[in-house]
Amino acid sequence: MARRCLVMDSRSLQDIQRDGPALRLQVKGRSRQWFPLRRLSRVLCIGYPALGLGALGETAHDGVPVTFLQPGGEVLAQLVYPGALPAPLNHWLDAAATEPDIAAAYALWADNLGRHTYGLAGAVACDRQHAAARAEALLAELLRKQKRGRLPAHARSWFSSLLMTGIQAELMARGMPANSRVLQTIVNDMLHPGLMLVLSWLYLNLPVGENPRETELVRYYQRHLESDVEAWIQRGVYSLEQQLESAGMIQDAVQKSRQHSHSHHSSHSGGRRYA
Image 1 (cartoon, rainbow, N blue to C red):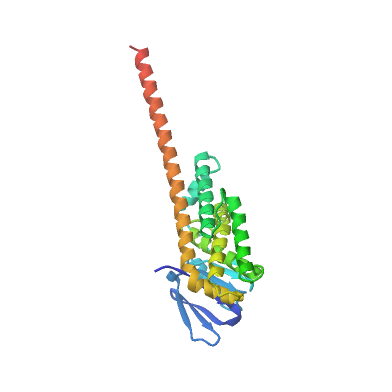
Image 2: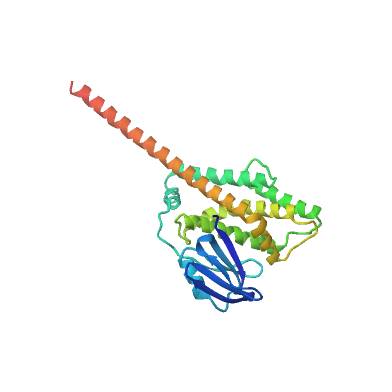
């Protein structure tokens, strides 16, 4: 079963408790709800709750990161547990500073991911930078045609936060610590292409003239976009891992081949000297 993002508004929360392997919520006007941690990729909380921080801390410790957001979608703070899993991505990307082949493989991945994703949003260009600018222009044109005006600031903030925490959760699930410089590099390279894709999906499917408030935007995301966005994130990270590993293995193979050739040459030369 795919793991999902849990979004809750602290202004309407009456109780948050850990109940064994689940998070138990009591929201005004609703019956209690249980959310098993094994089904959660992350928790987003609008504002700081007046109670239940201990339960949220335990949730983060058990591998489900918790992010606190302002009502407009901007990140306030995060609760994460560093973990101790092996991190192949960290291994390869730490080597990028001294290994040109690894650095080139990462740069190629970032460029391909960006151009492909911008292309899905209708922005095709010769390079990532031009595709990014074209995607912004196409989104603005779409909003003008639909007579929505300019992109609401809360839409950009909310979907940036949703994407950022989604990418973080996927990378941390693969063993990468939350405070890793490498993790932030990947988030930065995936964030804008993903944002343009999600906002394009959003406004192509919303009824013309409708400008939902932030809570309605998040509900729409969870109902109609989240599974596709999570799949895009997972494919992107998996592709990166495969390409870096391939570059590293090719590099190792070339080095071993050179060492074998050098050893064979030395042995052959030595034979002639002592013949």
